[in-house]
Image (tube, rainbow, N blue to C red):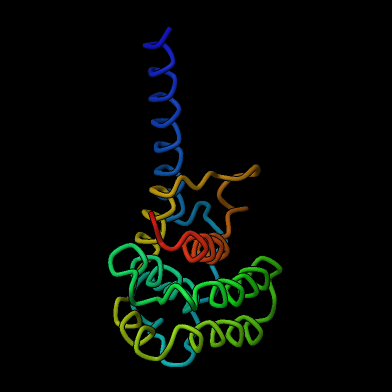
Length: 170
């Protein structure tokens, strides 16, 4: 019985990995893909490199990396306020608000994080592949309707809120 349960878990995990990998491959060929936000230049974020992410998703991945590797750079006393601002950003992304509103909310998050931390994150230039790798490692599931219904920008923002609320313990 125990072996059968372990086999089912392994099979389920393998199928999820194959499904996500296939979806990534298909999105790379233009057949289908997640609803990525526009990679528009704003406040010094580099979005002109190959496979660039939106500034808010670059920031989310950067902050989650910082919380994992050097959590002291995001003071515990500021995390609840930063998470609150980031939740507002996530809500705007999920509601497909105009880019001006999303950029304004992201700048509020940047101000709460502080110039030094944001300046440390900006040069990293993560790609869609980095985002998909993060989503796979964090257990993101493909929603009903397939990859076209997946909003990675929203997922990154929500995961950043979760990481801040956890204290970065991932």
